[in-house]
Length: 187
Length: 173
Image (cartoon, rainbow over all chains, first blue to last red; front, side, top):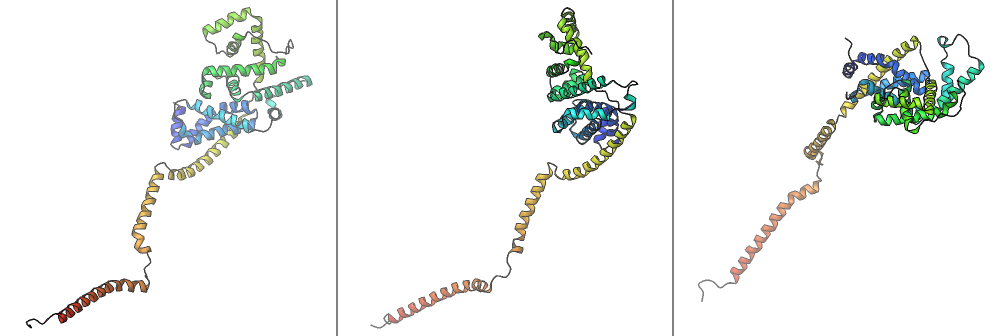
């Protein structure tokens, strides 16, 4: 039987590095995807998620077990992502364009190359989505990403954001309203 | 992509938030049924819901890194964790010195050492070679006081002698 996250946390707190490495292995993909939704860049998403793991590792003593390791860790991750966004000087549109350039892989290229019109439209949409997400206040963006992209429940998001479920619903509704207005032309 | 209307659809105000939650499957039985009933008879709300269904998936950017990426990820993470735990142990040993209980204990020990040094070291630190004149003076002082005493006694003796000389001879008339 595999040890639970909390068992691994207990082992890691007693100096067992391998226990924490196991936690990384369990959560790295989900952590990376959340970071990618914020950064929209592969390398930055990797750095941000790794930074969150390191912060969790150095602050394991603060984990009191009141919430699950999962909730505690993803709270750290979201904070790391929001801090990064605050620090970042470049515009979201620039980042997004770079992402598109960097992320085209043979496996993802469709059999038929997109027509120039489709490329223009895809470029416009990407830019608009990036700008619209960037323009959202941090709490709205967090609620939206965790719900829309990660499929977390309102309850989980509320725990992660340490707020009431009603507040998360309001953030989500406002985020969707703002995005709809920006992206209505692509509907 | 449909190009019917470039502006966002307008839903009934009292249902707007519920429609978003409905889209995400976050409404319970009763609320869900109420939205279902309303949407069936309300075209703007129906249109709003369709718009959510077409717009919101566009905001998700899929990313499927290859296996090599995940291998690198794990390798880098192990290295970073090793570096961090090395730094952590160094820092912890330093931090353990500054434990909450260590500060008052250290302060008390320092005060005690200072007090002992001042008390026991007083003689040690005091200047040993007192100037000769002072030493002589300290020795002379009690002798001088005795001399004054003896001088007083001599004066008293002399006065007794004069008194005896001036008085009539005992037995002569």
